[in-house]
Image (tube, rainbow, N blue to C red):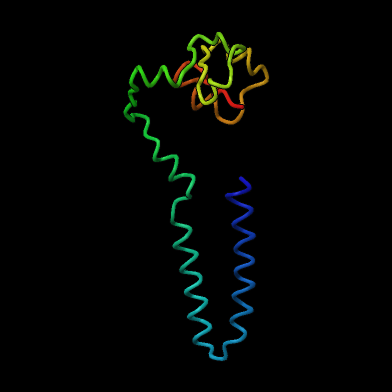
Length: 134
């Protein structure tokens, strides 16, 4: 809400103040009117454009093709798929994933997962993958 309502209002006030300061330097009334009309037209065109965040969300089609991964590549990327063995990771496992079944998510994140993990990963795939890092 803040980024869609408050920030645009602040930006509009700043732009209008700067525009009026600039227009004071122009002696011709007709030129000042044209500049102000151009500004209003620019604001109108910008208001009709979709937000960048909305365009990114539209790019995620629900019927997108599922990317198939080669089994050999999967073995190099995923350490385990049953959630076991995470305490046995070593430096050779950095960059590899441990995949946990859906029921493990509540044990790992009892107060809720960070960000949009639930919507983006757990609900769609039925599992939770965590990458081993340093």
